[in-house]
Image (cartoon, rainbow, N blue to C red; front, side, top):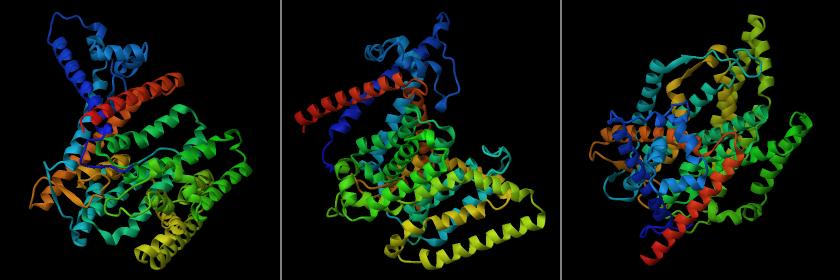
Length: 529
C-alpha cells in the first residue's frame, strides 16, 4: 500500500465526506436540545433520555433506537435531519463527532506545519529519575489491596489476577513509551521482552476466556476485532499509513484469531486433555513450518501483502513483507506459552492453595527455593542472553522470551500479600495501552510523512524540552483515555451482544456506506487531482 503524501487519497476524502454530516447533525442536535430545555412550555417527556450504565456513558436511546425500526429508515431520518431522531441519538452523534475531531487533530499535529518538531535526546539520569518518580508517586497514592476470589478455587489466591496483569501492562507501557520519546536505545532488548509479555497476555487472556466461558459467539468475536482494529483502521485512512506501521495491532489480531480458531474448532472436546494436547501440538507445528521453514512464510502471507505489507520511506529497498516477518517472528511462540500457562492456571492455583495451608516452616522453605531458582535463572538469562547486542539477541529472543516472563510471574506471586496488592495508577494506564501505543505516533511524537517512523518530538513550547514534555504528555494521555472510552461507546452502539441478525445488518450497512463514500471520493479525486 504505497502512499504519496503530496495528494489527498480517496480514503481521506471519504473520511471528510463522512465526518462533515455527522458534525453538522451533532451541532444541530445540541441546538435542538438547548432550545428544548430552554423552552418552559415545551412538553418533552416523550424525549427524556433514560441514562443507563453502558461503556462510555451512552444513553439507552442513543444505542437502541439508532438501528430501530430499520437501518434504512434511520439512514433516511439522519439524512433528512429528522429532529426527533437527532435528539434521540445526540449522545451517539457527539461520540462520533468527537472521534472524528480527534483524528483531525492527529492530522494537524503530524501532517501540517502548524506545530514544530524537536529532536530526541537521551539522558539515563533523567530517564530513570522520571520513571522512579512515577513509581514512588503511584505507590504513595494508588497502592490498593484487593479481596476478590479466584474463579477456580473461590479462594483469595489471586494468582495472576486482572489487577496484577493490568498493572503489569501499565508499568511496561510507560517504559515502552519513554523508550520511544527519549530514544533510549540501550533499552532495546528490554522493550522486546515487554512486547513479548503483551503477546503472552494475549494468549493467556483469550485462552482463559474462551476455555472457561465457552463463548464462541459472533458478537464476542466482533467486539474483540473492533477493539483491536477500529481505531487503527481510521488512523490508516486519515494519515495514509500502512496497517503494519502499528505492528502491535496486526500481531495481536493474528494471535487472537489463531486462539479463537484453535479453541473454537471442536470446542465440545476441549475438556479432553488429549484433544488439548493435540491442539497445542498443532499450534507449534503451524508456527514451526510458517516461520522456520524457508519460503513457507511468503507463500502463506504473500496474498495478504496488500494488508500486511509495509514500505518504510527510510528503507525503500526492503521486501514488502519484511516488517511483518520480523515483528511476528520475534513473538511467534510466546502466545502458545501464554495459552499453556492459562491451561494449567487452575492446577497452579490448587497447588498454591495447598501450599498456603501447609505448615509454616515447609511453606517458607518451598517459597524460598522458588525465589532462589527464579532469581538464579533470571540472572543467567540476563548475563548470557539479555546482554547480547541487538542482532544477536533477536536471534535468541523467540526461544528465550518466556524466561524473564516466567521469572517475573514467580517473583510477583510468591506470597499472598504480593498477589493482593497492585498499583492502580499503572493498572489504569494498562487499560489504555492500545490507545497510547497508536496515539504516540502522531500527537506525542512526529513522523511528518506517511509510513514514517516517529523520529521527532511534537513541540508546543520550543527551547523548553521539559515543559514541552509535560504539556504534550498531558494532552496525549487525556486524548488516549478519551479514545478508549469512545471506542467502547461506539462498540456498544454498533455491535449488539445478543442479536446476530442485527449485527449482520449493521455490518452490511457499514460496508455499503463505506463503499459509497469511497466511490464518491474516488470520483472527486479523479476529477480534481
